[in-house]
Every structure is written in structure tokens, then in C-alpha cells.
Amino acid sequence: MLLSYCTNVHPAEDLDGVLDQLARYSGPVREAAGLDTLSVGLWLPAELAHRLDTSAADRDRLRAALAEHRLRVHTLNAFPYGGFHREVVKLAVYSPTWAERARLDYVLACARVLADLLPEGTAGSISTLPLAWRAPWTRADDDEATRAFATLSAELRELALRTGRTVRVAVEPEPGCVLDTVEDVVAWLAARTGPEVPDDRRIDPEHVGVCLDTCHLAVSFADPAGAVRRITDAGLRVVKVQASAALEVADLSAPGARDAVGRFVEQRYLHQVGELAPSGEVLASDDLPVALGDTTGRPALPGVGPWRVHFHVPLHHEPAAPLAATTSVLRDAVAAVRAAPHGAEAHLDVETYTWSVLPDGVAGGGAAGGAGGAVGAAAAGGEAGLVAGIAAELRWAGEHLLATGAPVARTAVTGVPGTGSAVPEATVTEGVDA
Image 1 (cartoon, rainbow, N blue to C red):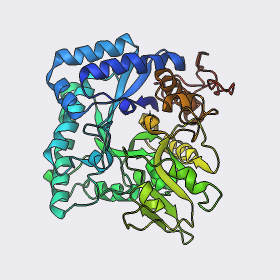
Image 2 (tube, rainbow, N blue to C red):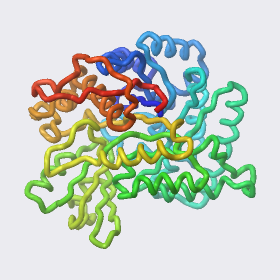
Image 3 (cartoon, helix red, strand yellow):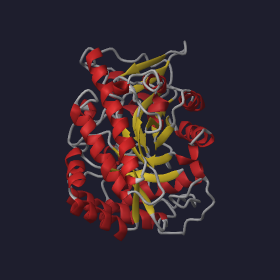
Image 4 (cartoon, rainbow, N blue to C red):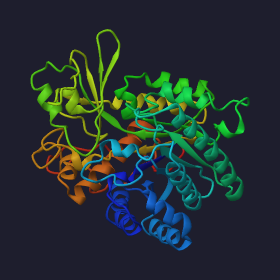
């Protein structure tokens, strides 16, 4: 598997902004992690993707900056269309939908740009949204999305023939969306891949597959190994894993539990919640304040079973009790993918985009989190702290997910600043097939 970190954690809407983030964050992350080279999972907003697609000079500027900082690109995140760091994102992240031509055009632009940036001999991946938020979504919308993916498949085949470089698009199921679960995305794709499907509706599984966001997977309370098996049994592949951990609280009745999880309520991103009821049913709420019982009259979750919250928490740092993180789901999912067909070709992209909205004093976040170290410094907005935090996540991923055995040089990031606690020495060389 090829390891990277996703740059949607950094706010950048144009080329100058992306070049600045590579210099301010990605290059220093590489140095802090002790890596000779580092792969970045670039997020290119739509306007920038189209600009790079039509300007060889701009692609050369980006390529030169990547080389300068010893970075490379094999995966893109094309889920957010733009404005991912505006004051309020919430449901806007699902627009435009796959029923709208703008979404197809955006992903195709990303594919052409990625093909031009790929290292020799490396296939590319692009993650995308699971069609749309669940409502409004009509049969006509579904037909448009089907035709869009058929067009996408044909264009990706043509791109591979023209350039000799394969780019695959990975559909990322997410709670609350049209394709809510792995079961949903497998059913939708598999119904459109057979030889009996008309050309204008056929999706090529060689070029379109699944992205497993392990935070989303955890919130759905799915069995990781079973989810991967369902994908491969349908003749599909896991193209990409978004390495992420959900916030978890085992017992809402525990002292301080509601207050602790309530501190993660914030206004920028949507934080869906799943509750595992005693019956085994997974109850769902569209956002954390609703699950807790806000003042809009919408029903709260009963709180009689464990909760998992769609809030990406740093991989290397366990939140303080009574909270926890679903890193076990991440570990099990990656192990299952690595053992599956094409697993060695899958991409592993660390995606903790929520550093800027981590609450103060919770899980080490913010200036008040004295035991949080790198987590706290990053949440408080410090560039050095964010660099240290991302580097620590990459080191954790190398040791706990890939275990390649390739040593990482000791660097200044060998402990949690201000606490004296150690960050485990990692054993990963980024980009090594493992």
C-alpha cells in the first residue's frame, strides 16, 4: 500500500495557496517524519482543477514545488468541490451532486491533472462523494448519475490508453448519503458493471471502485472484514482507504459522557452519529447537536447504546475517558484490504481534516489540553503543532497499519511537546509497497 496524508486539512483555494501549503506544511511534515519523500493526497478545488487541466505552465509550477519539497502525488481527494474551510460547510460539501454535469467535469479534470503528475509506474486514485446527500434524490437523478459514471469509465479508459497511466475513481460511502454504507455502494456499482448493461449505463470496475473511509465505516458499525469481503465478492476493488478514526463513547450514562461528547459540537462540518441499539439496530442522526437533543424539535438519539460520531480524531492520540477512538476499526479494515485481491495496490491516505475544530481541552485539543502535546498545539492553530501532529499520525500509520520495517530517522518529533511522553518510533518509508 502507498501511504500519504490528505491536504484537505489545509485551507487553499488557488494555486498560490496550494504552493504555500506545500512549503509551510507538507515539506516540514516530511522532514518531521524523517522521510526522504512524502506522498500528499492533494485536494484541488474545482476552479483550480480546471485551471491546472488547461494550463501546462501551471502544472509545471505545481510539479516543481512538489519536487522542491521532495513530495509526490498518487491520489487526489475530489469529494469537496470547493470552500471546504468556509465558516459553515455542513451539507454544502455534497454539492454539486453526481446528477449534475459539474461534478463529472470536476472529477475528469482531476483525473487528467493526476495522470500528468503521477510517478512512473504508479496508478492514481481519486475519491469522490457517494452520489449526493440522500434528499432530494430522485429516479431521474439516479439515471443522470449512472450515465455520468458510464461516461467517467469511458474517459478513464481513454486516458489510460493515451497516457499509459491508470487513474481509478473511488466512491466513498458516507452516513446520510444516497450510498450510505458499503452495502449500498456495492449494490449500486455491481448493478451497473455486467456485460448485459447497455454501454451508456455500464461502469467499468477496472476504473471505478470503492473508497473506504474508516471513520464512516465505524459510524455505520459495519464489520470491517465483512465490508471488504462484500466489495471483492462483487468483483469490485478497494481503490483507496481514507485512514480515519471516529469519536466513540461507550456509555452515554457515564458521568460526564454527554458533556464530553458535546464539546465536539461545532458549526463547520457535519458530524453524523450512529448508535448501536440493544436490538442490534443502528440508529442514525444527521448531526451531533441533533443526536444530543437540540432545540429544533428534532428527536434526539435515545442514548442507551454506544455512540460513534463522524468526527475525525487524530490517529495517534486516544481521547481521554469517557471518550475513545475507533482505531481498531481502522486497523481491521486495513488488514482486510491488504489481504484482499489488489490490496497491495490500494492507497492509504491519512485524513484528519478536523485539526482546526478540535475542542479545547478535549482529547488534548487546544491550549487547555496540557496532556495533548502535538494534538493540543495543532488544535490551537500553531503551524509547528500541526506539522508535528500530522507527522505523528504518519509515523503511527507506518507502525500500526503497514509495519514495513523500514526505519524512520529520529527527528525533533520524538515526544509530545510539553509533556515528556513519547511518540512511538515509526517503521515506515512512505510510498513503499507493503
